[in-house]
Length: 282
Image (cartoon, rainbow, N blue to C red; front, side):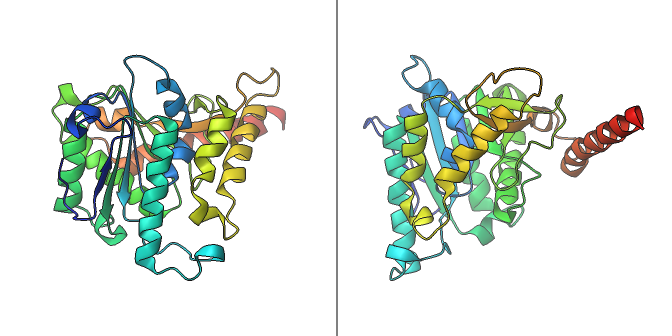
């Protein structure tokens, strides 16, 4: 299985042939950076573990360049850090029992360029190589530029598929902006409170990112617990942890839908809800 970048990495934890491993994927997460998958798609990982007929696939689109080099990594070059991040993502795939882990190693600048032939070709190869029931992407309201760019490149690739080949469910997950602001009708609760020991282990694999003081492991687990508790005020917690997502399936099903208008409509519904509640008790 060949991809555009010579640095692209394909890892199959159980040693199967890559094309066959990709074909087994039923839950696919395509993310910008190493560790994004484990932050946004823990629910999908849990859905596939020890579940016959299900396979989780992870895709990291960028090369991981430019990350801070602090603490024990302060003396490493950017190239060495990229290699470390690549190895960390492989370890996460092993621990999480992924069917396959692909790292495309595209520079962020290429991903941010609309119509990048190499990025498009790689994503189309992945999407045509499997038939996932669920695809987890970054959400279009994320505040990280590369996350939004990866989402847009994925949307372009999914829309290029024949309608019959498009996944039945596409979810935009929170990473660099929480989605607890969505109205209740727009929120999708992903059950991320399962297998807490595994969740912690998966996040702690990425030592190159947390050793310098960015405690993504603690922050992610804390956010999931907070979402579960603050989900509803008049009922006990249904989950031990929640990752919020928005339904992006309409954007894939109807290529004519404008992405900005679709996204801003969520804000309009929030605005209307806040105004209605204030008016109700004024």
